[in-house]
Image (tube, rainbow, N blue to C red; front, side, top):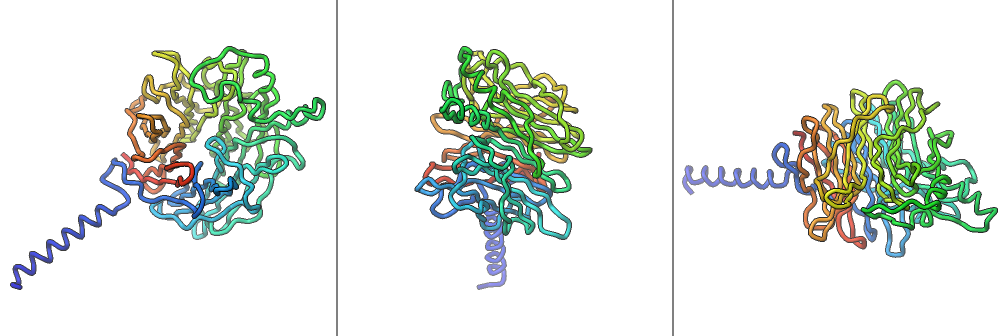
Length: 439
């Protein structure tokens, strides 16, 4: 072969190699979604219900893995390169097969990076037995191993509980919240009737409409309580909570702790409430009603709020509710607060007329606000993303591909947004991961 021909062949080979390398990169050009660059799963398990946390380049994902027999465990995997790759999954729960997981009752994770040392990872989940318990495990070696778990509720607390939220402050101290029905268990001693979460939300469950109020729904809600724990002591914050919607908690500097949940107001109005603390959770404000949405429903929507705290200490909150126009449908709204006591008027996130579900929110160090959710399109559930721009949310971008996708979560890490969701059928689902460059 002549030298010139050899040079042409060499350059062509290099060009082809570059094209192949670009095609395999975990991130496409700036601002465009990449393919699902990786997926997490556990052999012989349906992997679902993820949560995510990030600190710097460290990203941790926790989820539930359910066997064909129905037994569930909690797994977690950690990335140290901003979500580009993850270490093999590790089982977190120390008592095998006892986890209780669902979309609104996902395992929760919090992570804190440490200079020159492995990150500290906390994972919280609901365990089932004679009574359900809120359990917390800690890893000091970056998620490679977890120590024995501890129960956060009072020893011997009877009844049902779950739908927890978890955060860790800059010092790595945990803040946890959950919904609790030990009041129902106490009532069962006298009446001989054991009321459960199913009883509490059976009427009108997961509906996009509204139902007239009933005394039964309000009475059950008054026995539902939201609890808070700093990992050492628990205490009740408020009663009258909507029992099957996820909760949220975030922490900031100067002792800030903010907690959000769906509350049951007079007339069976299921609106979002926030309680705040400025002294590391020693005391909390009375619950503040974020917006008077007037969603009147005799049951639990199974769809709670999500919250994030910006670098400027602004609380960012997103939640679903029902609106009546052009016909009753689930919509998603956003509001902010600088102190947790006064919130801005709600701003609509989701398209008009579209039923949405399961919103989550992430805020970058540069103040960028992103909301993800799922909705049904042409008979299949898809994951969407929208960005806040000039006070309004842009048109939603579809993130998932052909497979059914639900319950997305998101976090910023190392110059990108990492979005994670449950993908595939319930028998063979996996945890899909996508990195999206900041815009």
